[in-house]
Structures are given as structure tokens and as C-alpha cells.
Image 1 (tube, rainbow, N blue to C red):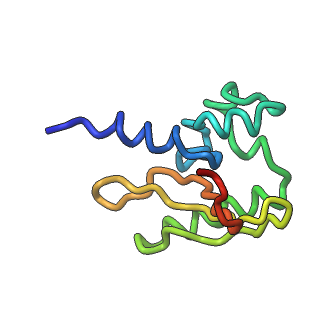
Image 2 (cartoon, rainbow, N blue to C red):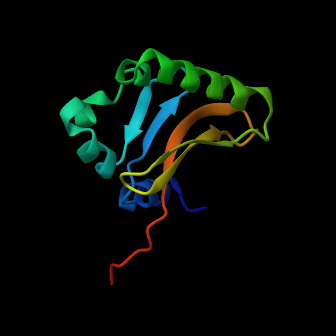
Length: 120
């Protein structure tokens, strides 16, 4: 059987949107290159191993904590809209990450751009 982890990492790393993956204790376990660049002024790749909660204000932290609790309440609770960023014209979601048994193992933030792509 082919090992898929290299393929999954490649998918995440090639995404132009920042991807910050956290465990259920809010520790940053991975940042793709786009996230490292976007958050370079806050430490970039050096944020890996640190708490995501240290990067947000108390209001945002409360929302993050409550969302992760909601993810844990039901295996069907996997995606929630968090906000629209009008400056970048994108919607932002929190997405649950689950193991092969459906148990919550972490989460990440997903950015979906509303502006049509113009690249060739």
C-alpha cells in the first residue's frame, strides 16, 4: 500500500491559502508555507509547538474553545463559518480533524476566496 502522508503534506503545502493545523489542546502542530509567510511577523514557522491561543485575544480564544467543544459533541460537527474577511473577500471556517474512528484529533482554519481566480 502506498504511504499517503507525503501526498497529503504536498496538498497542504501547495495550497495558496494559509493552513495552520492544531491539536485539540490548541497547540500548533503544522503550518504550510503560505501560513509561515502570512504570520512571519508573529514568528512564522517558529509558532509550531506553541499555543494558538497565545496568538489571539480573549474574545477570539473563547470562540475557538467553544468551537472545539462543539466539534467534540458530535462526529457530524465538522465545519463552522467563523467570519467573512471583506479586505481579502474570503470566508473563513474552522474544520474538525478526525482519526479513522471519527475521534476529534484537532482542527484547522480554512480560507475560501470569493474572488474569481485570474491566474493562468
